[in-house]
Image 1 (cartoon, helix red, strand yellow):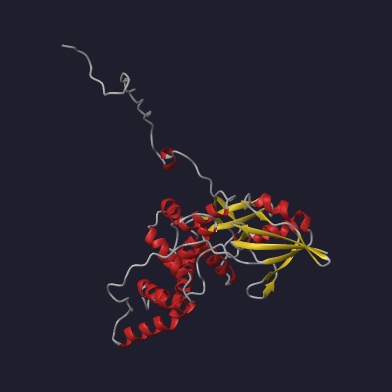
Image 2 (cartoon, helix red, strand yellow; image 1 turned 180 degrees about the vertical axis):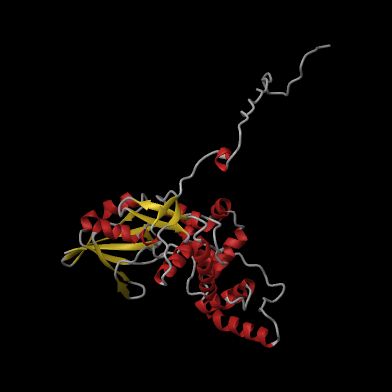
Length: 338
């Protein structure tokens, strides 16, 4: 009979497990003695922190957010800013750009205008090169008042526009796919529906029920349901029971936009630098002008405007135009050379 140590099929000889070296015993007399790392906090003048227009998913038109700011002001006036704001450093403008903590910053600035002396607020720096990653940080920072479901949905849709699918959003941000899909649907709801949701007059499931049935006309139906619930003594209107479950298709949203540029020769290079898969069509003669068209995704139009000298924009589908917007999730940019 063979003797010896048995080993599993396909495995080599077992190696002895090294005995871990015990951590040295040290005296703990203060909190810093327990640290395993250090993260620097910086004190900044709140006036020097820039709020990036359109970045925050929170809707400050809603009454619930007004109430939250009022409560924050009371707390900050009494105890100061307890939770650091998250900022990124923009090397080009040499500014601190807010990533998380807009409610706290708004409350501080309002208090200063009202006469409260606040010289500085604590901030922590976060990476800021990728706009999708910055947005993910803001959606998962877990500080202050949580975003409503429909506010989160606006952020989820922007991540989809950046190229993330629902699976990736769920995996990296920790939300269920069902929550993400419903939140994106609610983000598209008319403003009157969002107002009723904010007032807690209706449930999100009721809003979804009518949005799926009537689309943009859901406002009237949701208001009627809220009024009926109130008349019958109920605090909140709920969706009918046994409503069939629908799984909406989540796709990137595109904005069709034409923009006149002063230096169209540089347009292709500028786009290629910002986005590897830019789709450049051939230049097309048009009378005395020459046009070139590029389809753009996942970039800030303002960055292109700065690089190519864009003077304005024109939405061909809506027949509207204006100055250069702060950002869009997709665009069709048309350069013209006279």
